[in-house]
Length: 414
Image 1: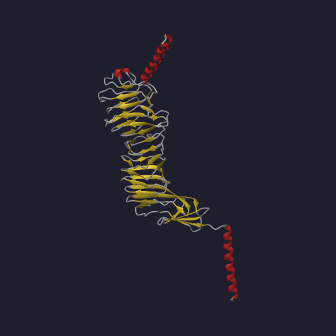
Image 2: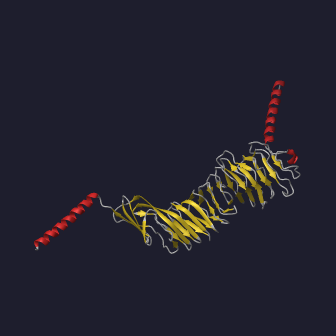
Image 3: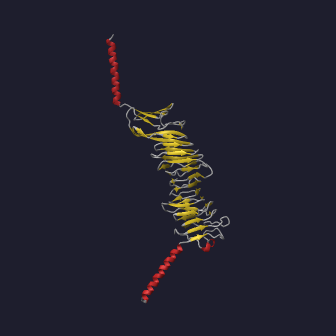
């Protein structure tokens, strides 16, 4: 090997080692020092060996907190910064800095160690980034309590443990929750709330109405609402992807529109669930407590319709019906049976058909199609066609002929 080739190899090796060294230097796991001298997140004196996670978009930048949080100075953000993820190995920590925002760049955003059984408080604001996926917040056996604002286009996936959201949130990627405490009117951001499993509750300390009108995905697994306080979810639409049940343990849970398709919706628990509008097939089981349907849509197709079925030992309270008559068979005399099950536990005390006139439970309505009547007791909807003008003319001529013939007969007998 000549000297020129040897020099080239040495230079190449030096460049390679330099690149490796640079890459390794970006992968920093910083551990908060149990002997921290201040709460400043940016002060290297507060990190073991002076090594803090860089303010970088690299996902490998990790901050770790362990030790007795009650005897250690807790960290505060003193500037807007980015980080890959944060791990809490012990309970009781508070990450402060309410005037600043921490951008999380890793899919595993914030997590407790499995040994943490208490609460970790995140008071600083959180930016979930510009992605379309969901950041994983994992409380394991403890609780992650977020009181700062959460922004960004990504969403939150609560893997295990309890997560409480109480900030003024605007993140758009939705929430997929196992165990969730909703503690502000904007807690869920603007995306879809997917309650695929587990429990959720109103953790605000009083009755709460959400203002973000999130759509809800109830999925096909049982959902549990604790009901420490009543909760109004807003005007969004709740979807079922299979037969499903919602347990309302206490107080009242109110949702906007329920779209159940052909699935059966079961209401369980001693509390009350209110559905402002139902546009599914209308198959309900009330195993306990009360289910209130403010408005149920019934769609007529030919001489068939979706029937309103409500069974179980609980109370089914129906506020009103509305009919989609677009595809109804308007043959004179047609009838549709709307009640699909016995009404033993039905509460029809506030029942009404908007735009119809009521006479002791016999409802009537006339439109350009004909005359409609609905018997509240039997659930039978009937249609009578309005004769065409030519028919009215013929009927009038016929009646006149009958009168004339009668007159002639009487005159002939005189």
